[in-house]
Amino acid sequence: MPGGENKVEARAREEQMRTERDELPARGARLLVIGGAEDPDEDDMTILPRLVEMAGGKNARIIICSSPSENPEEKVDTYGALFEKKIGVAEIIPAPITDRHQAEEPELVDAVQRATAVFFTGGDQLRLTALIAGTDFCESIRSRLYGDGLVVAGTSAGAAAMSSVMIIGGPEKGTVKREDVSLAPGLGYWRDTVVDTHFNQRGRVSRLMTIFAHNPNVLGIGIDENTAIDLVPGDRFTVVGEGVVMVFNGRVTHSNAPDAGDADTLAITDAALHTLPHGYGFNLRTKRPILPSGDEIAPNPPR
Image 1 (tube, helix red, strand yellow):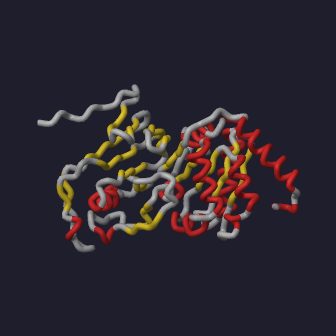
Image 2 (tube, one colour):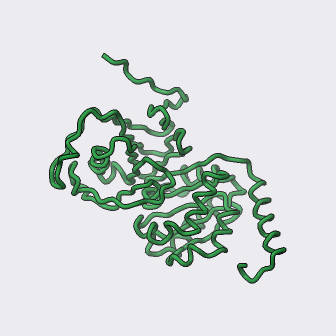
Image 3 (spheres, one colour):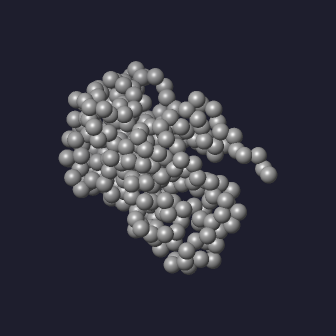
């Protein structure tokens, strides 16, 4: 038992965590996936307040996991001040994990059980997955995300790591070639999707097109800076912020990817691209964009 507590104390602690969660309204699975460089003007924030609203408003209890950062304590302090002093939440729970053993500690897993949101900071997505993937901390988050509505959010590296496969590198001036994109397994909180961040600011269209050429069944999501998607996995998402979200999908009619070498330029035909600003959305079931009015945009009729 953590801290040497007896069975009675452990049951009391578990009951307290259940009571704290029950004080908030029930929610379905929600993700907030942020393209990085969010809310540069602290007096006019949009995205981080959206996370707090999703997590219970003033009653929100947010774990800040700063493992992607080389300065995790500093990241916790920075975001903790924004959430507590600028926006207002019930509790900030620091998780500056720098060793996989820390991600197995019962106290941290218990914190996931009473938290209403987990927020992954920016930094290096490989550092994040190397430190937490497969740990009790990581799997407790997954269980609560899909079990009773824990909100999971991430910015930049923290957002890129949410998909099953994540982009870990590639030249900003590359073209549509296999050698221009490096991939690694992600945390898998959002399946059948690849997320790229700082998207138009860093000229990353070709990176997603390269991935899409090799597997058109995967949805490619490019998110601009100071932009996010409020996502119900398997259902739909809504765009929030000042930039755009670019969605790559479609019934591809041809790609030379099966026979192309690493340095060969890829061909891909009949891929669909949707550019969605604030208020627009996307239906993940029908693969169709949604207007701010809530109406789904119908596809063009066949000619």
